[in-house]
Image (cartoon, rainbow, N blue to C red; front, side, top):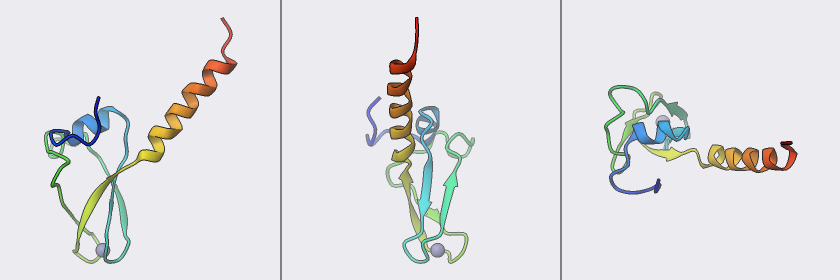
Length: 84
Ligand SMILES: [Zn+2]
């Protein structure tokens, strides 16, 4: 699956176990959102905006790349230690 395509939805991200975090550019408040929620599942990631809970500014969703990396590392480690 190609990440960052204009047709990518939040539901697809959730299926890939990717965290979606919204960071507020004004007060740096962060919130992890649930991409599998019925209201978001079919929404496109491109152009999506979220209101900050604290100050009401518009924050942009950010993909949790760190988790993808952690998964890759875990998979790599398992291959080395696995027997059989
Ligand atoms: Zn804010």
